[in-house]
Length: 378
Image (cartoon, rainbow, N blue to C red; front, side, top):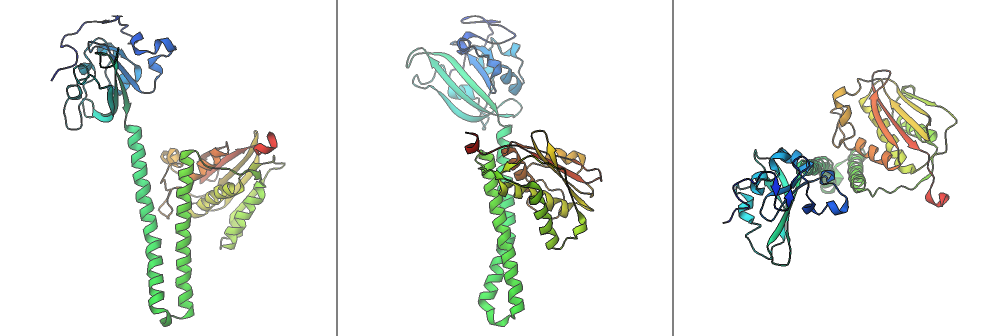
């Protein structure tokens, strides 16, 4: 089977003229006529001429392969880019771009290995002067697989978390309903009520989880819809505090401070309620002492700060608070709430930050910009 190029080096001169050793750029890439710089491309770009020697090796290719551009330019493609498939076979000998089928136009994207076992995604295009003619250029695109691996790990974690979170309530629902159906007459009304209340609570838990998954899907795909209406943010916060008091929290645990006048806020009230509910519940569940909520005007918007007097969030965890599955403690939860909160705030065009409160606990501050519905601005 033929090997790409020759074993000898031609120095710094390509088939089509001198090759600049610093830039590694040549008009044969086809980008010069467009005024584009190969170094501006996010993916690695390697171009070999008709004799199989490298005439273009951009900055991304240098970074991904750890091969200095000066060493790659002018060398055979198989030496500058020594790729192997996942079974350890040399990829250029397998594909044989210059001596293979004359009808072949390239190679689809696939996972290949660089020296040292680093995995990359590689796509190749064979450029011919005429159909079935000899190959004039081989254009290779290289992409790092780390981002894709992170996405795949995130999806796997999401599936595992969902399966775990669904198993417990569904097992409870199935157990209680089967018991009631089989032995209804044996239980007192009080026992029946207790079991049905448990079933109802677990059904609500499943419903919340499904809602969170739908929100994540919409956030990740950029399809989170907002129905902006006038929102009284102070009244919304007060309503959430009252709900916690009605659920058994001591009223003195909450402190609401409002700086007026507040600008008119147009936002999705349901989504704002979701943000407030999550932040306040986190402060109550994971924090300690007084939970303080400050509402005040901000440049071109309104800011809301939720803080507590608990142990706070460790400094090393600050940058992971708004990622999927982050949990500040072992007190339950899916670890998806703050990820969704960030997505909702940013969908409104706002920002959210986390820090340490004056009392030592956690402090979340989000700002929503002043905005109006499109039909009022058109």
